[in-house]
Amino acid sequence: MSTNNMFCYQCQETAQGTGCTTIGVCGKKADTSALQDLLIYTAKGLAIYSSILRKREEAKKLILDKVNRYLVNSLFVTITNANFDDEAIINEIKEGLKLREDLKKYIKDSDKNMVERYGSEIINWHFDSDEELQAYADKQDVVGVLRTKNEDIRSLRELLIYGLKGMAAYAEHAMNLGKTQEDIFEFTEKALLASIDDSLSVEDLIALVLDCGHHGVKVMALLDEANTSAFGNPEMTKIKIGAGTRPGILISGHDLYDLKQLLEQSKDSGIDIYTHSEMLPGHFYPELKKYAHFYGNYGNAWWDQRKDFTNFNGPIVFTTNCIVPPLKNASYKDRVFTTNAAGFPGWKRIKVNKDGTKDFSEVIELAKTCQAPNEIESGEIVGGFAHNQVLSLADTIVENIKSGAIRKFIVMSGCDGRMAKRDYYTEFAEKLPKDTIILTSGCAKFRYNKLNLGDINGIPRVLDAGQCNDSYSWAVVALKLKEVFGLNDINDLPIAFNVAWYEQKAVIVLLALLYLGVKNIHLGPTLPAFLSPNVAKVLVENFCIAGMTTVDEDLKKFNLI
Ligand code: FSO
Ligand code: SF4
Image (cartoon, rainbow, N blue to C red; front, side):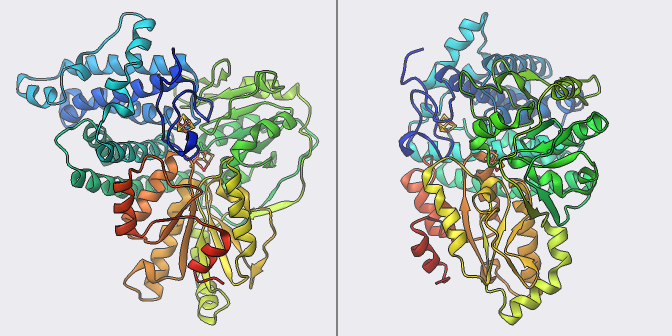
C-alpha cells in the first residue's frame, strides 16, 4: 500500500494535530487503519438490517445471541491502541458480513425502502479473497472518514462514532458481567446509521451527539452496577507500588471480570498478580482485593509500558487497550497475551472456554518460569473513592465545605498520554492551593497520584474513583451535593473541570458531562482535531468548553490564585 493512504484523527495524539496520513502516531499501519474503517463500515451495513429486525420475533435469537455483541465488539476493536492485528480484524469483518447475510433472510418486501435508503453498496459489497477485501478497505472514498466531504457534517458524524466507540467499550465490559440494556444497542444502531444518512442536517447531528451523551450516562451506570454487584463497592484502599520476591503476572486494560478469573485461577500457584495502568482500580473492590496474592500496582500509565514490561520480567495480559507496539528486540514480546477486543500480531490469545469463561493456565504456567519483577519504586498510594465511599463521607465533606476548609474540587479525570505538554497536569496538581481537592479517574491520575499532596482534615487531596468509566461517580457525587446545598444548577457547585483526554472513551465521558449540563470544561492538552471550526464554536458557545493554556493562567481562570 502506498504512503499517504490512510486517514485517522480520532485521538489526541494525531499527527500534527490534524490527522495521521502515513502511519499512526500510535503505531497503527495504513493497512490496519483501512481494515478498521472497513470494519466500522461493515457494522453500519449490519445495523441497517438489525435496526429493522430488532423487534421481530423471528430474528430475536440471532440478534440477542450474536448481533448485539458483534456491534459493540467491532466498535471496540477500532478504539485507539486496542487492536493492531490485521488477521483478527479481517475475521471480524467476515463475521459481520455473515451476520448481514443471515439477517437478510428475515427481510420482507415491505422493508425494502428502509434497506435501500442507504444505497446498494453498503448492503451488497462482498469479496472472494483476502486481497479483494484489503482492496475494498483501501477505497477511502467509500469506507474512510474523508468520504464525507462537508467538514462540519464529517466532524459531527465522527464525533458521534467516537462517542459510540467509548460507549461500546463500556457496554462490552458490562456484557461480560451479564448486564445489558436494550436501548444501548438500539442507540448504537441508530447512531451508526445516522453517520451514513445524507438527509440529516447539522442540527440533527448535534441533537444525536447530545443523545449519545445521555446513553453514555446510561452505559456508565450499567457498568457501575455490573462491577459493584459482582465485586462489591470500591472502598478506600492502600495499594503497594513496589515489587515482591515471587514471579508475577501483570494484567492491564480495563476488564475486571478477567482480573477476577485470573486471581481465582492463580491463587495457589506461588505467583503474584500485579495491575498495570487502568487496571489499578481492581484493588479497590472487596471481591478482588480479598486475594492474598493480589500484590499491587506496577509501573505507570499505559504509554510507559515498554519500560515497565521490560522490568517486570513476567508475562503480561492485555484485557483491552492501551497497547504500545513493542520494539523489535523487546525482551517481553514473547510473553504478552491478549483477550477480548485487544490484539497484536504474534501475541498469544487467552483461551476462551465453551461457556465463555477464560482459561489463564498457560499464562500462569509461564509466570512460574519467570523471575520476580525488578522493583522500580516503593511505597503505597491510596484510592477507592467511588460514589459509595465518597457519599459515606458526605457529612464530613459538607462540613469541610461549609467551614471553608475545602474551597473547591477540581475534576481532573481522563487519560494520560506521551505528549510532553502533559507535564502541565503534574504542575497544575502541585500548584493547586492546599484547600482544594482533586477528583480523578482514568489513567490521567498517573500524572499526580504519587505526589503526596496531603489531606484536608483526613480527606486525601487526590480522590481516585477508579477507571475512566468511573467518572460516573463524580456525576453521582455532584448531583448529591447539588441536592444537599439546595442548588438548581450543577454549575453553581464549587467544582471545576480540568480534564485530559486521549482516546474515544474520553469522548463518551465528555459527551456524558455535557448531557448532564456541566459547563466550563477545560479540555487538554489539545482540542480534538475532529472538531471542525464550526462544531468547536457550537461547543464553546453552548457549553463554554475551553482548551488549556498555562498552569498559572488556568489557575487564575478557575479563581484559584
Ligand atoms: Fe487510559 Fe487507555 Fe481508561 Fe483510555 S488506559 S487511555 S480513555 O484506554 O480508557 O483511561
Ligand atoms: Fe493517529 Fe490516533 Fe488514529 Fe492512531 S488512533 S492513527 S495516533 S489519530
